[in-house]
Image (cartoon, rainbow, N blue to C red; front, side, top):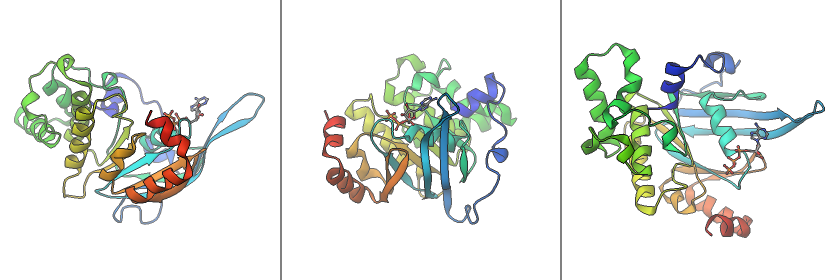
Length: 264
Ligand SMILES: Nc1ncnc2c1ncn2[C@@H]1O[C@H](COP(=O)(O)OP(=O)(O)OP(=O)(O)O)[C@@H](O)[C@H]1O
C-alpha cells in the first residue's frame, strides 16, 4: 500500500489539490522530464515572527525513466525536499512539476504495509478504480513480478523482512501505475541482502519503458553505483549534481568527516 492510497482512504486530504500547490507550470516539464524544480524554498516559522530557512533555491530536474539519488549530511533537507515533491508539504517559494501519479515510500515500511497479506496490500489502492477481479489480480501479479515478490502473494505481511515489506510498498505504487517513486532512506536499517533486494526491485520497476522514475534518498554511498545521476545537498542547497561516480568523488574530497560518520 502506498501513502497516497492511505491518505485517500482514511483521511480527508491534508493539502489542497496538487494543481493548487504550484501556481505556475514549468515549461517543457513533460518533455522527457519527470521531476523539475525551480528555485524551491521552504521555511518554517521559528517564533518571534522569524522564518527558519530549510530549503534554499533548489533547482534541478530528473529525466523520465531514471533512478536518481539524493545525498547529504543529516538535517540538510533531503526528506523535506522529498515531502514537497510528494505534495505533503507546500513550498514557501518556487515552482515544481512532478509527473502523476507519484508515490512516497517511507523508511519504516510498517507505516504503509498494513493489510493482512501481500496480495491484499498491493491490491488496496486499486479498490477505487472499478476494476474486475481478474484485472486486479493481473495488476497485482505484474507489480509483484517487477519487485521480485511473485511467490509471496499469499504471505502474511508480518512474516516479511524489512526489505521485503519495502518491495511490497513499491509494488503497491506500481500497481496504481505510479509514474514517480519518491523513496526516503529505504535501506538505512536493512542488511546487505535486503538492501540490494530493494535496489534491484527499484531498478527493475523502472524497466525499459521510461514510464517510471525514482528519486532515492540515501546515506549509503555504495548505492551510488546504481544511480543514473545524483544530487548532493548541504544546508538546504543542492551544491553538486552529476553521475554517481562524480558525486562520490565530490563527497570524498568535500567532507571526509561525512564519510566517517555514515560508514561507521
Ligand atoms: N517541522 C519542523 N520544525 C522545525 N524544524 C524542522 C521541521 N522539519 C524539518 N526541520 C528541520 O529542517 C532540517 C532538515 O530536515 P530534514 O528531515 O529534511 O533533513 P534530512 O536531510 O532528511 O535529515 P536526515 O538525513 O537526518 O534524515 C533539519 O534541521 C530539521 O531539524
